[in-house]
Figure 1 (cartoon, rainbow, N blue to C red):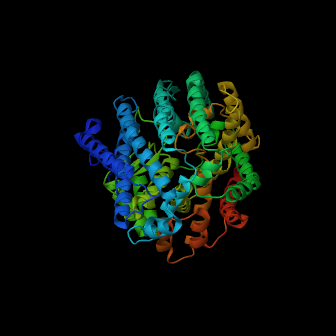
Figure 2 (cartoon, rainbow, N blue to C red; figure 1 turned 90 degrees about the horizontal axis):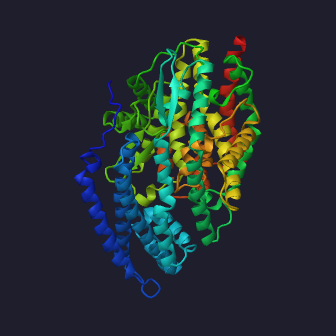
Figure 3 (cartoon, rainbow, N blue to C red; figure 1 turned 90 degrees about the vertical axis):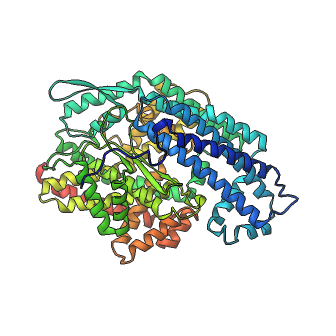
Length: 599
């Protein structure tokens, strides 16, 4: 079947970035904010117990405003991602951020009013049938309210964040849109690649020398703009640290752990298992270097595909059908969702200039759809990315009937649904290979996930607290940032590489996301958590229903409670994490056995 490689944004708001429907939506949100602000202003919880119906209406109004803002934000960000050179999106996005800022101020007052309610009154309100589905979320908000400052101070922080915290995050996207990386092809023709195109090209098949040259150009492109990137990162971190100090937060990880609804004990156990398992991945890296004809891998070789087997050139249509068919074998509902998404143009995958790098999925709460952004070049990694993002979309589809706050799952479990989808497709690819070299090539592609989760993301996790510690004493220079990154990469990879990527602190978007600090360890959690689910899925006849039940609970309890309820495991003990590592070791053992005759 033929699928469009460009997404449909007109079905969200017709007319592009100048959409009259979007303008009308923003006007409606402004009216809703004014009405709800008036309601909250007159609520004096300490002296007056709110009526249950009135309270429910207030909660629903706040969720409706959030849904409208999310809908508008996804639309504008999607347009901006696909048209990185268009200057209209940025000011419009700033207007939406102002609306979101007003909502945050209302939520601050709402949370503080919840604190003023006595426990018995609060319990009565949240246990009424209309609110039972979000009782956990309201309890969470009440707990958050305990740490809030006075209304005026919190409002000032939110107002300053618009042109400070969020402004610097947006500035990063502007800087990235100006990055150009020269690339000379096999015919000697040189062209300028965008950051997204160059990133994809580094993972494409090419001679070692050609890839090394592209990597030098990639590093140089970011180095040329090191000063503005360092300014951006320093000011983002500075704002975050000042906010932490104002709220009495001294531990960098406290907020990330709260956002992910997980404990320090779980994080420590997971990363201890990761550290203990590093050697099995290093043996794979050594073997891959031999297969590439090198003594030791360089940074750019990690994602370099092996070309031992004759992989067919995969078109987007072929990749899409492959994902759909293999999803369907595991879960008919996953397959149906993937087919619906592709047929209804939820996916932007065209390989063209002026697109931002990377990939993502965002849910549209008002239309109960999703939109997926990526760039498809035909590599196995691209098929894995498509499966990954469609896994996210499936998660969104099974919770779309729940109240909006019940859909607010944390990042770590968000990555569970996406990374769960990848081995479904990867295992099917390996199984379908009809010769050892092709199977070896596909196993190598599959190994990109554990390499990223155990080594690359661990390097990011090591870098970030060291950077924050340095930032507490003042501005961190570009050279120091590169030194910190180089040290973190060497620590994570165990000096297994010949060269590294010191400018990774600039080229990696995740360091510049304002609303999610430590955008790293949740990926590793989601990956290993999904492996545990995947292992169980192969032995359970009722897997589909059990899996959906787990996904529907992802914003309804702590991560530890979720695992205990649906998987029967204790995340603070190493056994569960080690079971996931065992699946990785199985793939590495097969890779080593198949490649031994080639050395």
